[in-house]
Amino acid sequence: MVNFASALPYLYEETWTTPWAPLVFFLPCFYKYGIRIDGETLTFGYGCTFPGRLAAVTVPREEIIPGSVTSGSATWKDNMFRFGGWGVRAGRIQDSFGWAYVPSNGPFVEVKLRNGTAYRFVTRKPLEVVTLLSTAGQGDAPIWNVMDRGDDKKTK
Image 1 (tube, rainbow, N blue to C red):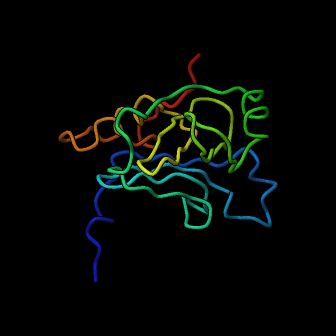
Image 2: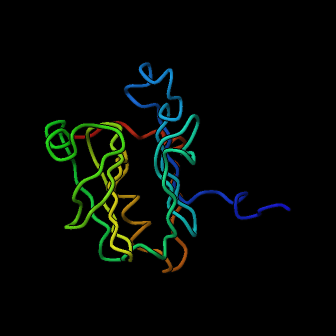
């Protein structure tokens, strides 16, 4: 059976090699980090070539509490003292227990689900991600693809 939903383009996609890629020879599931947003789901985490099943999370967009989508930026000190470092970490996010997917320092997005679980994940384009997740179910959303845009230079 063909899954036509998987053939549709993603509303947003970003994939990049983690800074510690040379250290994950024995754990290839942490080689790449990525985010994918389509019409129904948000997927983020680690994988060999894109967010995979072993070290990634997929949540239905309808489970995200609309007003809970926030963004910010974290330094290495923030990540070290709040979560104990980088990788997949547990901690308090938005006054709830949650999971942080932190492959590097910098901008992040936080979401809270209807079941009370919160997630923080790093993204290079937090404005686009927040816009897409905040407008879920409100008509057509713009399509972004970080790999195709060519303007993913870091700004201060």
